Amino acid sequence: MIARFLPGIVVEHLLKVLGDWKGIRTGDYKNSDIFSSTDRKVIFVNSGRSALYLALKGIGVRTGDEIIIPALTCPAVVDAIISSGATPVVLPVETGSFGLDPLTLGEAINSRTKAIIPTDIYGTRCRISDIAEINDGRAVIIEDSAQVSPVELVSWNRRHSDAYIMSLNFDKHITVGGGGILILNRPGLFSLPPIDRSIWQDVDDLFGAGLQRLLMDRAVYDGFLPMTAGREMVSDGLISREKVFNLLRSYIENNGYGDEQRDELSKLADRYSEQRSGSRLANLIRRGLWGLIRPVFPPKPEALGRVSEMGNLKRGLFNMSIKHFENDRKLRQRLAERYYMGLKDVEGIWVQRWQGDVLLRFSVSLSDRKKARVLAKRLASVDVEAGPFNYPAPIHRIPTYRNYIRVVGKMNETERLIEGLINLPLHSQVCEDEVDRIVAVVKGVATERG
Image: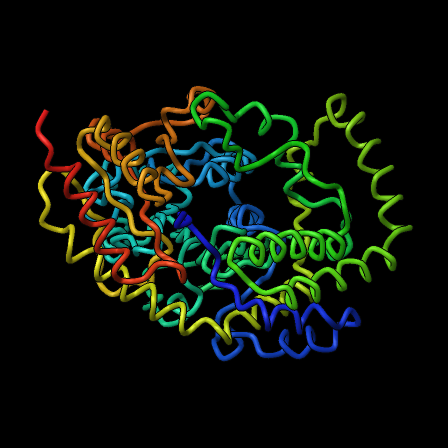
């Protein structure tokens, strides 16, 4: 089975970094940051959601303010906005970039608009120059670049965006088992609150409690929960190592790596367990107590400002991954071009615009949503995993968000686009012949009559 998504990780190099728990190698990598040669302000934090929340608080967002977002975006974006006290204003997406439609932006901006958060969906940049022109400096532009390659982000023309948000979660170009980056192109616009360097409870757990726990709808998301109330209550150091180990185990087991690498990973895991057994016991007790306390005392909104700084281990893994990312970049560009050239003129589908971007996934949308389901099944029958990854429903269609958002513009075409969305495999285990095979299946379903 060709997996729908795999992170671009070089296991051999990860094992070298993880092999030294004293942090010597990790520290070396931390000092070679990809952003160190720029004049931007870069803050590494514990999640992309935390980075966005930090940015919103940095521009003074408060109750009554409005934040403009596209209908196709991560629920974590909505959660950060609501938690900051503002109202999300949802706009249609356009069929070229699958991002925010600039044509509806003019009627949405008003005196209450504090920020615009366009999304670079699946790595395709939104129409940022058009968005900036229509905005005309009235609101801060915070570009949601969670699904963009960090290498591309550094090279982009940044004059239209005041800030970028990046995610280092498991389903991104580069992952460290969880983390986020806030990149301020115009630091003078932001007055950031303090970042906690010692908090033992991850801010994601706070988002999983109280109001946020009520905002998810299992029926719409079919079991996919971007934020979970029961995440581990552990220190940043512990959660980094455990998440990395789980990620590596899964990656090695699913990608045919040899016994020698698996044995090396197991030895590191055993060594970690021996050194951390006391901390783990205390952690289990803490987790159990918090599970009892959380439903009775949900966090106050201001508690969400306790964003924690990313630990050295994750920083090291990020910079190490950047150093070995070039081959993955080139492969993704070749495969995306092959998909695009094979599908761009097929009747009955919308193909996401490709202009040399390094895509996280290649996306198409069938104008007939019934055919989208047929396509997913047809691909599965030939051992190809495909389907709606991340966002199977537009934000305004999630029932429990409806009381917290404002919708501007007609959503008919946007809903059709999102409901027919299929993500095709785009990673190191896909070869060009397999892309051709997938393209043939997509064409066959799209052009079927009846």
